Amino acid sequence: MRITIKSLFEQSSDYIGKKAKVAGWVRSVRNSKAFSFIVLNDGSCQKVLQIVADEKIEDYTKVTELLIGSCIEVEGDIVESQGKGQSIEMQALTVHVYGKTDSSYPLQKKATSLEFLREQAHLRPRTNLFGAVFRVRHQLAMATHKFFSDRGFYYLNSPILTAVDAEGAGEMFNVTNMDMANLPKHKDGSVDFSQDYFGKQTSLCVTGQLEGECFAMGMGSVYTFGPTFRAENSNTPRHLSEFWMIEPEVAFMDLEGNAQLASDYVKYLISYAFEHAPDELEALQKYHQFSAKQAKEPYENHLETLEKVKDSEFKVITYTEAIDILSKSNQKFEFKPEWGVELQTEHERYLAEEYFKGPVTVTDYPADCKAFYMKQNDDGKTVRAMDVLVPGVGEIIGGSQREEDISKLIAKMDALGMDKDPLWWYLDLRKFGTAPHSGFGLGFERAIRYITGMKNIRDVIPFPRTPNSCDF
Ligand code: 4AD
Ligand code: MG
Image (cartoon, rainbow, N blue to C red; front, side, top):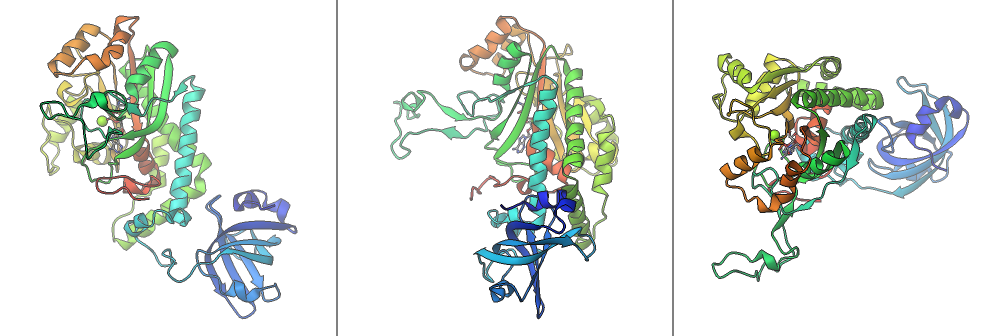
């Protein structure tokens, strides 16, 4: 039976002097007269297995002809490695070639750009770098479930198809099965959605929050973890049209509790990655070091910085304080910081990177910058919102205490000119047994970017969807 390279290294002392069978993709081959050195990775871990095949094995010429990217299965003896950095290696007895490649295989040994690899998104899981990123991604997903489940939260699957614009931003992808070339129309020329599949206009969700609130108001503490879709026209290193979001929602929790939960969660993610993906983080660190050197940029030790964050308290400031800090800084911003206007990425990054040199939670934003559901402060100007900003990325979490007072909520919806009918059930939560409650959404890919140190969000999701790009 085949053993993964991960298990082989984990149990290396048991395997020394014994036979094993591995299978994977060739990272490199070096041929000398009587030997071939094959470096094999099977994706189970960051490590590679060195395999020595000598001319005595059957079909030795086939081995010498192997190219990078070929898929092989090898049975051989596990021996202690002579080379440095490796505890064990394999002396091949038989090599079976599952699939050859040729010289047109796009992932050759020489360094390839991330842009190029995005065009080869079907093959990039075979690289050292993307193996690391996606194994960290896996660990962070596991960490998420463990963190919330251990704290008594229930995992909720909120719907993906929806008829409400829950963030009120209108950036939704329509869902229809109507014949686009022959749309049913009203007399005034507008589309008659009553003839659509659901009998009304529907979209892909931009959040699962409102449904999360329904469950928090019955089950106490819940969290969602699912895909979210936004038709924003933002071509930036931190925006995706399809991304994953984790949204906890908690009854009887105020904004302070929410901010605490958010920082506990982010710190837990970091600790979990250190514990469960140390080789991956190490490999990423090496990659960033190398890239910085190539670009002649200064390199800040990413792992050391993360290590500090995991044991630190996040600073909490109000939006008004943030504007004050930004206005008094001598920083040249493209957009002048101004009270009443949402913070720009450059402002967020200045606060986290330059000023606080670590994550910072900003609370109590102007009501006009934020969604309708946020709890209104007594000042009549601000709401109980919070964003968690981190170095390198900016906002990774957005959340708030929710408005639980039905009359205030209705007044806000009316002031925004919102149609209340589709949200009758959301209002019901305030009509029947309302309670203070809070929650937030963590952009999964932004958190992965932060922890892996990758600079572009397209490189931390398997197959990125962005404006004008929906390949694979
Ligand atoms: O700040 P947002 O829009 O908040 C909400 O959706 C709330 N319903 C969350 C809640 O209170 N339950 O989005 C939350 C997070 C952002 O902080 C960001 O990390 C991420 O989702 N995000 C995106 N990530 C990638 N691409 C995009 N286009 C994103 N838009 C938001
Ligand atoms: Mg936000």
